[in-house]
Image 1 (cartoon, one colour):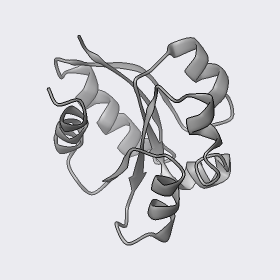
Image 2: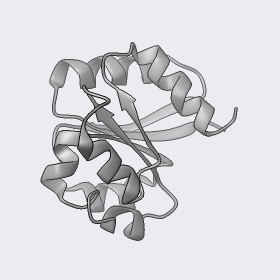
Image 3: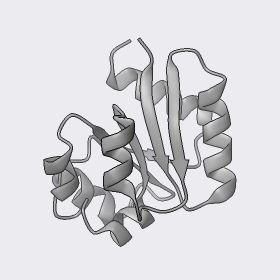
Image 4: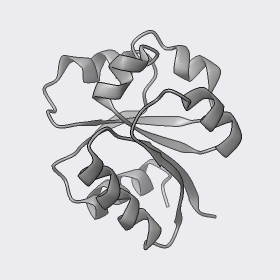
Length: 122
């Protein structure tokens, strides 16, 4: 069964590259890719993803990763933070609040998908 993914990423080029990689890779289904989190709760309820790839900058705007609200509302969803800097203190805040992990944006999209695969032990 394919892993159902939603992307929230502010960087248009990165969002498109990652979306394209998901679209052509067996075992993954892209349910949506968004530039902001304005409708995140409604989108997650409607799309029912297994994995949310969330730009750490958008997670701060959302304000829900830091306080754990996103994980309380959607406990069945694995949230993976997307960051440019693995030394960003917000990564640890997000993980402590319930994010499943983080992925570095500088990695090629295919490596990001392999990391998602490892989470599901496929």
